[in-house]
Every structure is written in structure tokens, then in C-alpha cells.
Image: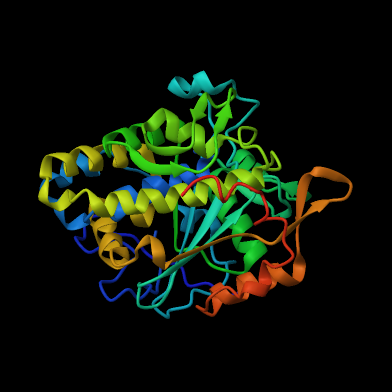
Length: 374
């Protein structure tokens, strides 16, 4: 595999790692149910009209946290296709530290229960999103964390990559299984997600059937609802509160995908650019909530990404789950369907739509919850 590492320069006003043309820069550069959490943070922070953030540059810039993924992974990575498309790994941490402790205690390091690969097409008018179930058994490569080697593992649960090796290992695992180079990484946790939704004033959804889940503290009757941060978190975490669903992570992913589209519509409808006070409040919350790769670790970089992605609406996003089947040896785990998964990854590499036949026989899009929320 070829690599052309990229150099970071935080002093430059141009977005690091992103050109205004949308072309990827060549040359060296420098957190449960968290997949939705991170996508929400990405959408809210990046697509809100980033040009309006400049007047509070220093305040917001100080909020951001970055991880130098490029330095950690080195040169042995998939080819960086300089075709104007972009791939972003968005994920979240299930860490129960601090205020997240109300959701339980850690069983070790933080894990990424789910993740999404967001592919922005050339021209930046549409996107494909591939959800990777947390329980997917994958070949996890060797990783390095804090200078220590983390041995790889056959048939490791996907979410353990983040647990044992942090963001760089998660990116490396995704790149190894897909052959698609990740341009960027974004992460956020429970508490940051709740604050982000509250700062937006809630998100409007309509439920077609009752959803009751004591574990996620969610009780919704059929009808229209404006979800605050706590209820939104309950919705994207629930597995057992939807009669007819299979109670698995696959069903939860469908709820997450529907919620993300509702969030996108909400962001587009509230006119943030005409309300600087609200824009600042949301931007302040979002930049505190997320951790990014070092190429996105500045307001200028996020402003550049906002311009790149600002034309993508909810109706222009195709969301699928990685084609999987239940593991016959352990029904609580899933295995990628080799042929169909290859079709998905080939489509992303070639900047093409994901073919419908790729998910036709997959358990991934049959969780039974897609009809519960709209």
C-alpha cells in the first residue's frame, strides 16, 4: 500500500488538510451508541455555517482537542486518492468517566460501540454513510499506543480497536478492513452529545409506534416530539424498547441513522447564521464536545470543512449498515459478508453510489426499527 503523509501547520489560516477546491492535500501533514453521537457533533459543528465562527476564533480554538493520526500510523496506509472526495471516520466513546458515570461503570478502556464511515462525493453535493456494528468480528491489526505495541487479533470485536489502541488503532482497523484511507477522524461522548442537542433547542421527530426502554430511560408514545439531550441520547442508545425489533445493535443503528437525518433537517431549519448568539453557543458546545484528528484541530479547518459540506442535505445522504450476517457460533456477534462488503468498499474507493445488491441479503439493515421514527 502506498502513502503520502501530510504536513500540519496550525498557524496557517487555510484549513489544515483541506483545500478550498475540495481536493485532498498531498505531501506530509500532521466517545456508547457513540457513532450517532459523533456524527451529531460533526454535523452541528461543521455544517452550521462555519464562516460565522471566525469572530470567536481564539475562544473556540482553545476548546478543541486533536490526535495526530497521520504521525501515529506512518506510511503503510491505503492510497490517498486525490479526486475531490473525502472519507471521515466518525465515532464516539462509551467512557463512563466523570459525568458519564450515570450510564454505568467502565469495564476497562473506553470503546467505540459503533462507527460510521462518511464518504463525501466529489463535488460535495451528496454523501454515503456506512455504519459498522460494534459487535462485528474483524481482523484487528497490530497497533501502537503510548509507544507500546498492541498485538493484533483475529476475530476481534470491532469496538475493541478503540479500547486497546485509541483513535489511531480505530482508524487503522477501518483502513485495513476497507482499503479506504480516512482523511479525518471525529469523536464525542455521552455528555457532549446531550449538551449539543440541548444547545440546538432539541430535535423534532415523529414516532409511529410506542418506544419504552427502562434501560435508556426513554418513554415515547406515537406522535410528534421535540427531544432534549437526555431523550435524544435515550433514543440512539435503545435496543430493547422497540417491539418488533430484534433487540440488537443492528436495530439501534437504524434508529441512529433516522435520528441523524432529523438532526440535519433541524440544523438547516433554525437559521443559525441570522442568530449569532445561538450560533456561538452551539459552536462553543460542539468544539468542547469533540476530539478530532490534528488536521481538523482548528476553527479554520472546521470552517473549511463546513464550506466543503454545506450543500449536503438529509435527502442527499445514503445510509447503510456494513453487510453482515450473524455468527453461527455466537449469535450476539456478526460477521462481514465478504462479497457484499467488498462491493461497499469498492464503491467508496471509486467514488460511486453503493449498489443496492450489496445490502440485499444483509442482516445489517433488517433490525426492524426503521419504521418507528421519521
